[in-house]
Image: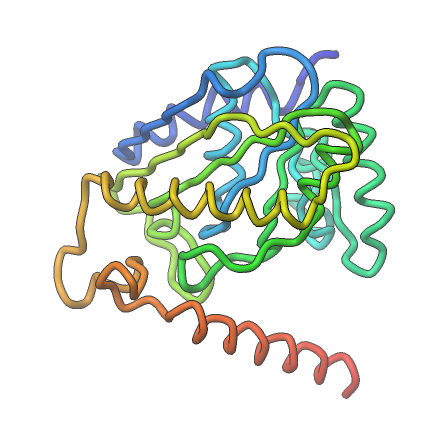
Length: 252
């Protein structure tokens, strides 16, 4: 089936990034299977992560169908794009139906993209994972592929102004596929996935070619790596406060 929306976007995006002077590095793209279904699990540090993870699959000529919150589908610009690229809306109050749609996509040979942290990490470290990605890979009988993006938070992330100034480095690392046989303990697989991606993230940060330009530019580095981003514990508290505020607004 022709990709009337996705194909032009994948073609145009690198040209836009070149215009912005982005230094994009993709490692391990050969870990994306050229045929058959797969589940990609990626960390989540930016609103733009799905674009760069998608580009990581482009050398294999695959289009990633991402699971994303359904509010994006109601956006006048984002909605038509998400539908055109055949991404999968997630209604968090009816998650089972979204999982079913994604599972069928993986079974039918699609590459499905999942952010197991569910929301952007304010600490830029890995939060706890939901169990959906390992369960989907097991039920669909497809490989689970860990992916780590780094540097995208410098462009557009939660609680920070957008910054598309030139010259930023972005890295996408695709790890070796993980097999999830029938009958696997998906919680244990999720823990293994988290450990693998944590190591990949530490490596991505260590080899990242740029460092903060000064004291006012340390916000995008994790506290554990000498930056001023919230610690994982602080970020968890911030997320909980945000959820409480949202819940309060709904009941007012």
